[in-house]
Length: 340
Image (cartoon, rainbow, N blue to C red):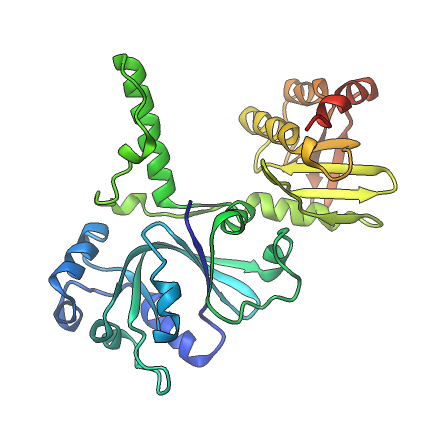
């Protein structure tokens, strides 16, 4: 799974200038002073990932040599500043080249060149408040991400899942896996390991390069959460993933999974995730609920009810309706919910 770097990048005038120079626009690395500053190997690597000859770039000084040496193609960078995740990028090519860095950014008078350079395979501007990261189980309220931080393992996965990030590299890997499995089944051969179908050297078509940052679910959860009072609301990390909401109050414990659509496939996904999360609740779940931006079809509401799961849906701005599962279905399913 990708590493996640939290990169302060907008909090001071120097960072904002760098943003303007190499994030707001692409650098034509294949021509002029930029091309002259690259080694043949660096230029070849860049042209393989960015065949059009231009890319967005970021860099770091020698203070971050250790952290920067860990980053690889497909890792994710959250560009932060002024209490917001202002952009999310996916690492393309990483290398150390002071001459190339100095063509883009003036060296720091104290720390020197921003020689740890990386291109961005994809980049999307965002407007995500820090509170959405603070809500994740492994983070603390008030953490302002003052220095570069590289996350790995469960904590990195938590950010990717919690913010709804899917990288281009991961999407390509999954597609390659699907093709390999289908080919193996059709041809009567064994299924090859995913490592054998992931090709890091393949060129990336420009139209593929769009990192996904799914905001619909996050905004829906935020709006619904604002309607709650007198309860403890948090997110719970389980071995199966992160719940959208874990609510504890006078009426017991409720686990809520939000989806960006009320269509059938999303209803099925919410059902599966809720049943997967439920056994891991610290307190036995009294209610499972699926949250949608609009009301699903009646047949899909009945599908949820069959498993004792309530259907929550947005009926108007800041207004939500609850279609409760029959009490007997909920009671019947509670034992299954709690079986770890």
